[in-house]
Amino acid sequence: MFNKIIGKLQLKITEPSIITVVTANGAQALEKIMNVKLVLERIMVPTTFQIFESKDKTLLC
Image 1 (cartoon, rainbow, N blue to C red):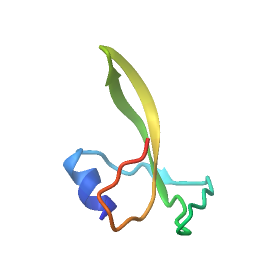
Image 2: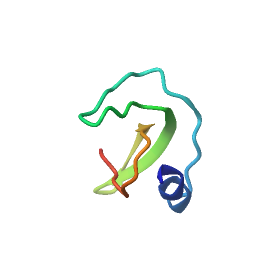
Image 3: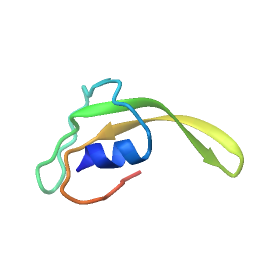
Image 4: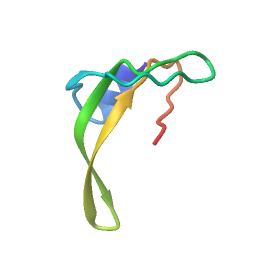
Protein backbone atom coordinates (compact mmCIF):
# COMPACT_ATOMS: atom_id res chain seq x y z
CA MET A 1 0.00 0.00 0.00
CA PHE A 2 2.79 2.46 0.81
CA ASN A 3 4.06 2.22 -2.79
CA LYS A 4 0.72 3.61 -4.02
CA ILE A 5 1.00 6.63 -1.72
CA ILE A 6 4.64 7.21 -2.69
CA GLY A 7 3.65 7.05 -6.36
CA LYS A 8 0.78 9.51 -5.91
CA LEU A 9 3.15 11.94 -4.19
CA GLN A 10 5.77 11.35 -6.94
CA LEU A 11 8.48 10.47 -4.41
CA LYS A 12 11.24 7.87 -4.68
CA ILE A 13 12.74 5.72 -1.95
CA THR A 14 16.38 6.76 -1.59
CA GLU A 15 17.85 4.16 0.77
CA PRO A 16 17.07 1.52 3.40
CA SER A 17 16.21 2.74 6.87
CA ILE A 18 18.67 2.10 9.68
CA ILE A 19 16.23 3.29 12.35
CA THR A 20 14.26 0.69 14.27
CA VAL A 21 10.86 1.95 15.37
CA VAL A 22 8.42 -0.68 16.54
CA THR A 23 4.76 0.37 16.57
CA ALA A 24 1.86 -1.14 18.52
CA ASN A 25 1.14 -3.53 15.65
CA GLY A 26 4.81 -4.53 15.32
CA ALA A 27 5.62 -2.54 12.15
CA GLN A 28 9.11 -1.13 11.75
CA ALA A 29 10.73 1.28 9.32
CA LEU A 30 11.79 -0.38 6.08
CA GLU A 31 13.11 2.41 3.89
CA LYS A 32 13.40 6.17 3.82
CA ILE A 33 12.85 9.05 1.45
CA MET A 34 15.31 11.87 1.96
CA ASN A 35 15.08 15.56 1.11
CA VAL A 36 11.27 15.74 0.81
CA LYS A 37 10.38 19.40 0.42
CA LEU A 38 7.46 20.43 2.64
CA VAL A 39 6.11 23.96 2.36
CA LEU A 40 4.76 25.39 5.59
CA GLU A 41 3.37 28.91 5.38
CA ARG A 42 5.57 29.69 2.36
CA ILE A 43 8.71 28.30 4.00
CA MET A 44 10.30 25.24 2.39
CA VAL A 45 11.48 22.69 4.93
CA PRO A 46 13.52 19.71 3.69
CA THR A 47 12.77 16.57 5.69
CA THR A 48 13.23 12.79 5.66
CA PHE A 49 10.34 10.30 5.76
CA GLN A 50 10.68 6.84 7.28
CA ILE A 51 8.54 4.36 5.32
CA PHE A 52 6.50 1.66 7.07
CA GLU A 53 4.55 -1.17 5.49
CA SER A 54 0.84 -0.52 6.02
CA LYS A 55 -2.48 -1.79 4.74
CA ASP A 56 -4.07 1.60 5.35
CA LYS A 57 -3.72 4.87 3.47
CA THR A 58 -2.17 6.51 6.51
CA LEU A 59 0.48 9.20 6.52
CA LEU A 60 2.06 9.83 9.92
CA CYS A 61 4.14 12.94 10.37
